[in-house]
Length: 589
Image (tube, rainbow, N blue to C red; front, top):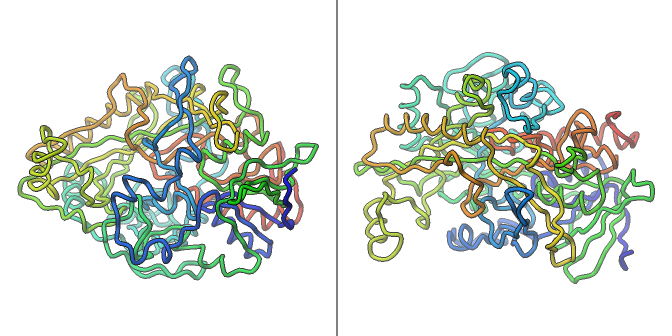
């Protein structure tokens, strides 16, 4: 046992990003003694931003607010015939680190899933004839309905100060919003962000082609807002530094700008940074946890006793900690048995970059979620069954910032030297993108487990990721490419470049795609095919709850944060209303 034992608490939370922060304030407001353990350093806007200017080299290139691969790398392979090798630099995704987690550097697109996304297995069974979809596909329904979860998505919108144009208010379709969204019980708390030139050009063409554009739902506040926790959020000043950065203006929703200032004032909440949790300690019967073991910043091993354990880290970290702690049966792709590691899914993207000699898009005057999108190609909104695949995408033109490093230039422009400088002078601010962000189904052979060869600095196995694109996703990409090219050509650029997956593509870990990793400890109706029940409670260890993207049974085209936040509030309130009064399984297996 560790040499240091802390005083017991009602709940210990591992990680202080979005899910950890939500759990912390909800449980502390109910009177529980709560302690959070954050693997990374302290990060506050006041101490770590002002008076420093935005720094693209430091944040986007040197990744100063991301986890380091030395701390928590993963090993990667395409299939079980290969040996997995560790990621030495973050490429395809960027896990967060420190207080606020990935909620510090996210872009803040706050779009909800659709009702079909939540019941995708039901939709597939009704819409697709046998034999159309791949036999190894393992899609599942979320174990709740739209009507059950919508009030919590509504609450999280208010927490974030969400900005947008309502498209469906209690079943009434409203002009200018997304006509395909599920019914909202209330309008967006704030109006949408201001449009930029590329947004209006895209929206005009999309409408002309018969599509239904609407402003990107945004976690960057368009006006001053006070959220349900009493925290004030400032209006966005369109500084152009959202993705990869703290918010300089306290406008982008993050744990720092929406929750932490409130919960830190509560005497029954405390937290420790640079605290690396190595294991959830279980009682001898393996049915309950007694706390967690961690290594503090002095290198000492510490035991934190707790009645409830919340794993609130990044999706990959949550799955790894469950595997290292013996919580739930590890998934075996050969037999299909086991649940921890099952249904890992990522996503794909693609785009065209359009160049206009006579346009100036002023990309430095923008917010991360600035843009317009269409949802005409989400599942159920077009004839996917006749095309032989399931899934879809949000199709959008977004202008997330104008920092110069990595600015797209026309084909043939040199990548360095005088030619590159001339290209930047001639073309900076004269391009826009039309992009897709797609679904990704879950498959028997895409999964997570512990690597037998590589360990972290604490001697624990790294998480091993076995993942590759499947034909379903590649067919989807080719279909969507044609739709993007249709819009691109209608915009009449002087030239354009394109980037989409080829029909024979394999997953490439080097280029950034998204940080929307999901699955590995999914929620479901039974312990046969899920690690967690509908309240994010472990089927096997009833006082362990695991909120996060890990709970998604597959990935939908909408950004995951809205549903992650909503599910965390839903789980926290069930803990308060039911679990602490009568500890035990909240759903009978």
